[in-house]
Length: 60
Image (cartoon, rainbow, N blue to C red):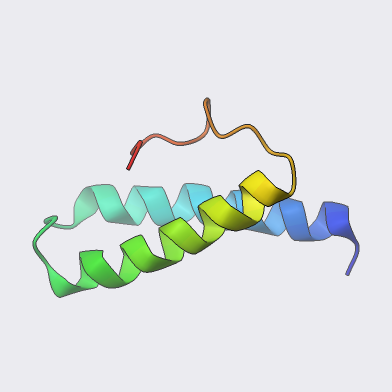
């Protein structure tokens, strides 16, 4: 998989995950699990040079 493909998949997953997180109560166990992946994806995207300012809707 090329770097561009990995970035594309990560951006899509990041967006999808944020949609799911907005549907779940922040105190729910599911939210905590999703937040862990959310933070992982933020690290991956940031280290790939992606500016999250416009795509990070949760700002956590």
